[in-house]
Amino acid sequence: MVNRLRTLKVLAVLLYIGPLVAGMSGLGPSMIAPFVGIFVVWLMVLRPEQWPSTPEEWLSRHAWGAALTQVLSQTLLVCVLLAVGRGLGAVADIPPRPEPILPLALSFLAIPFCRMFWDSGEAAKIGVFLDAEAEAAHAPRAASHAASAIVPLLNLADDMADSLTTDAVAKVMEPAGAELRLKALVAALSHPDRSHAALRRALVLWATEPEIVASGELNGVMASAFDIAGSNADLLRLYVPRALALIGAFGNQAKGFPTPERLRNSAAQAFAGDPNQDLPADLRKDLHEGLLALARAIEAALAAHAPVEDAPMPQAQSQTA
Image (cartoon, rainbow, N blue to C red):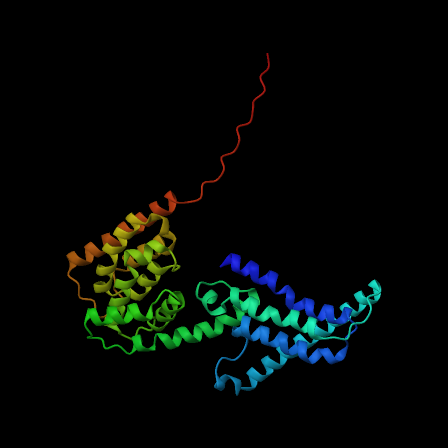
C-alpha cells in the first residue's frame, strides 16, 4: 500500500501539468471551468471522505458549505497554475497554441490512472491516508459507522447463549474497523446501569483469543477486555487465566495489556464496589492472587521486551608512569 501511495503521488503530477501546459500555450480564463471540473472529480474519486456520501448529507447546509469551499479552493489553484504557465510561456517565448485538447487530456488522465492504484476505502480500513487532512476528514465518518455497527450487539439479550453472542460479536468485529468498534463498545459498556451480561462475556472471550492478541493489529485489546470485565468477578475469573496464558505466550504484546498498576488497584479494592458480588472468601482470594500474578507477569514481559539502549562506550584511562 505504501508503494501504491508513492505511485499515486507521481501520477497526480499529471493533474497539475494540464493547467501549466494550458497557460504556456496561451490559453486563458476560458479554461478555468473545465479544469476546475476535472480537479473536483479527481477529489471526489481519490478523496471521497471529504465529500458527503449520502443524499441526506448533501441536503445539509454544512455539506454545501464544505463542497463550496472545495470548489473555490480548486478554482484558485487552477488560476494560479494557469498564471504560472502563462509566465513560463512568456519567459521561454513559447508560441501560442490555442488547442485545449492536450492540456485537458493530461489532467483528465490523472483520474483513471490514480484510481487504478488507489482505493481510498480499502486504504482507510488499514489506516493509510493520502495525508493528515484526509485522515482528519475520515475520522468523524468512521466513528459514526462504528457507533452504528455496534447497535445490534447492544440489543442482545442478557440471557442469550454464548454460542449465539460469540457469533454475533465475530461478525461485527471484523478486522476492518474492529479497533474503532471496540472503543465504541468500551464507551457504551462503561455505564454502570447497563448490564449486557451476555455481550460482555462474548467480548471478553473474543478479545482473549490467541489469534486476536498475537497479531497485534488491535491496540490495547486486552486492556479493553479488562475494562469490559470491570469489577464483575465472573468475567474476571474468565479473563485472568486466559490473560496469564496469553502474556506467557505473546510477551511482545504486553503493551496491549492493562498496566500492572491498574491490576493491583483492582486487586486491592477486592471488588467491594460491586453490590452483586457474593463470592466466597476462597474464590475472592484466588482472584486477588490471580490479578497480582498477572501484574507481575506483565511487568516481566515489559522489561524483557523493552528497547535496549546503547551501552556507553568505555573511556580509555590514561596511564602515567
